[in-house]
Image (cartoon, rainbow, N blue to C red; front, side, top):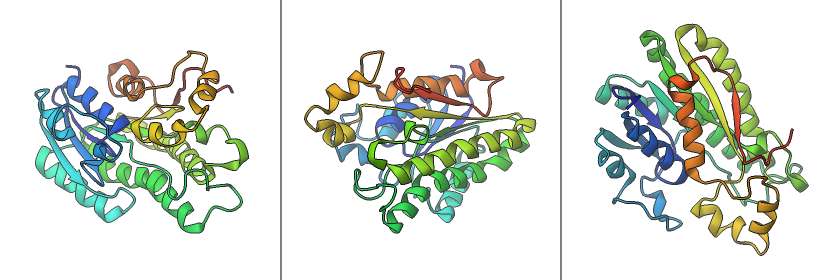
Length: 265
């Protein structure tokens, strides 16, 4: 119960990796606020959970939880959300910026032809959403003299993808990495650690129903991973646990790849 008495806000937490973050934080004793644009998004690709909602899964672990619908790409919605959390819980100690995703067709975002609206929407979802949430919680963390912020990048921010696919997504996630390092410099003197996770190939229900369902896709992906298996949401959540507990007290401004050895620098 290392996080007993702490309050965590997890964005994009109604399914998959965000849900894994929320459950792990709850098991560590934190009260957890679940944010998503759809609190039942786990139903979209048939993900099975242990209660009617993720909020109820969290409360079953003996901590408080609230679900808040908000689009993190819109500053006014983020500010309203954080205000609601502060009114209900008094403070935010931990921020997990997990919300994101690609706008438009998954394989249509080539570097030279991606539509402007898809580029802007992808940047809003991934980079600006991270910025808005960090801005919304930073001042009250500074006043309390403690905080943990974990941002989410991607292997696409580190490695260009074949044919230039995922270009806007990679651009946005590269921005998240740069922002993480700058924010760590700014907030470090106030006892706030800011770090970043960069997942590679994580088997989610959405990807299993989409790109990973293509003939030969899984076999090819497995051939790229020395550990011999695809990542799972819990693999990412375990790294998040490192960043929000005392194990990483002297770690800030870092990017940790969760890739099974698949990212080769």
